[in-house]
Length: 276
Image (cartoon, rainbow, N blue to C red):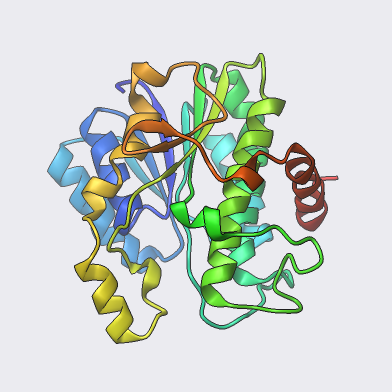
């Protein structure tokens, strides 16, 4: 990975931290995209020290804010000559429904629209850097999700886990549609289930349930293995529009192959982020 520039979102904790650490250890120039500078700086310093890689950079962005995503993307394009790998990793689970500054339901905004807007804003740079890769962290929970365009943001009915599952299905539909739109560009788009990982993703859940989840889950380092594989392995060069579990291609839920739904989700997402 020497000479490659990799951007990892949500890189100061959990799977994102492990992914950034592993790629830096492979010699890549890694840009850690994090929301909170105070929390991220110690991790940034630790990764640089542990890997001996001085080409690890910290950049700040709140992925719930479309304005901040646009600011970051413009800054990144202005300061980086290329982008070889984009890893959409940041995500959350929210028990209570809330809205972002853009008036978007928070889980949908961060877990789906954050991926969608950031990727689209960096797409020209990725194409100029081709062959390049886009890796999006989804979840096996996508199989329990539903894309209901009449309740896309939980306007009529909201549940924390259902909102999360719906957003993870959106990640898969986004990957499938993105891969179709990128045909012939040498930019690939794949997504993955990292496994049941004990991260801060579930910190909004009741403490007993959060503790139980941690007992039954794998480590972030293990969970990051498929992300790192899709970002770096020659075995997946040219492979696109697929979903991986434990570094193996797997079939996603039947509804994730609905091309009409994927196209409509793309159009609705474009409107919500002002890309039309």
